[in-house]
Image (cartoon, one colour):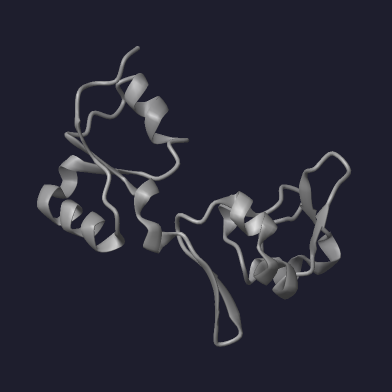
Length: 128
């Protein structure tokens, strides 16, 4: 199926995205990765009037250290996290397999818990 028609906005900053959400209210939906919204649109289970695409909001994609903690923005790509020297230095539980995939050694998973949330935690580590 094809999604219903909607207005599309691609803000360049978080402030611009917030302004759009304030203007359109509950008629707007955020598009960040498209993994859940796009199928809902295709099957017409969701029909928002406005889509606000966060992928161009550069101030939401960052990896930085503040007060001894590694902080990542909401739009930081997993690929950027994988190759970040800051993350590698702060979280030594990452290990690269021969096939190129990245896993976390379970013995050091406690460090990862301080860095990531459930969506990007490795599958072999139980929720805490």
